[in-house]
Length: 402
Image 1: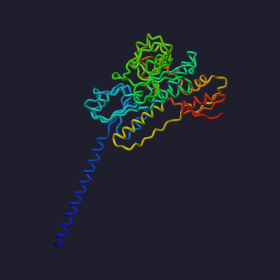
Image 2: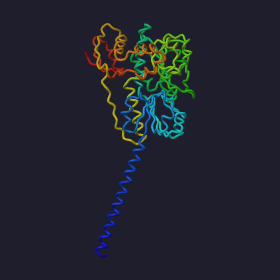
Image 3: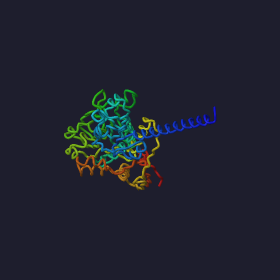
Image 4: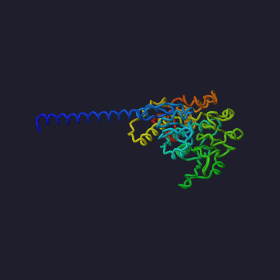
């Protein structure tokens, strides 16, 4: 080959390489552009704490109030994050491209899981995220009722109906308070045997009933309108329709605490007047529990989409980091009630709901103040019995010797 031919071949080779390189770079740029255009779209309830901070790095987050979510809001979304106020079913999701749904709540009776499974849509709940918050609410309610009705918890029998994530904690806390506890949980009884008794036995023997069951309307363990109590004290912090709310209006009970109601937020005003303590579905609303729910659904979404989790919540300091109290001359229950009121005063939630009524139900939930769980508070007890210290420690308080 002559020198001119050799030089021509070199030019052709370099021209080919340049064209190949440019084409490759263009293809990569198109791929990058395509990836940008299909960035994951996430629709979320704004009342899920830190939802934008957690999910923002995963995609484009659009916040829609839970009760207002409609099919048009989620049609082009890949991921849907809800709370218990949003029904997730065919009416919401048909025609959408949703691939994953998560609820930042323990219960998921608001989600049609069969529909999701049939559509191949991933699902996760935050089981147990706020179980301790609900159990602390029950303790606060028990101590408040004992004060108002002039009895000691150690003299009473508590019936715990539903002994799952929440119920287990309630059993442990109630026993620490000196109560006799009866447990009813048919699914666990069939699986484990154990210390469970029938619902009829619990209703007949217990002075106080507290309900911690999911809402199910069919099957051997259906809980819809599970019972119509006619005596004793009843606490419901599970699901409103577990009790027939209209029947409660005529029930001759010694005490009634409701955190959950049929027809929320349109609760019966006359039932609110009847209850000893009424709150707007906030038993599980400790800040710790809510943030734990966000963390759980974030990690579930990362697993589903094959993403390495990176977000870690940074919680603010608790409003009441330390309590010093002199329990000299006080009954242990009275001293403990005083301590708990300083961390979580259930009377304030009751008063707030009575002030605004059903019309303000959702607003109270949306604007709920920061409430931290007992483990965030350190106690210094003076003049206290060993029993008081033991009760406080079981409930999660950190103790310093005086």
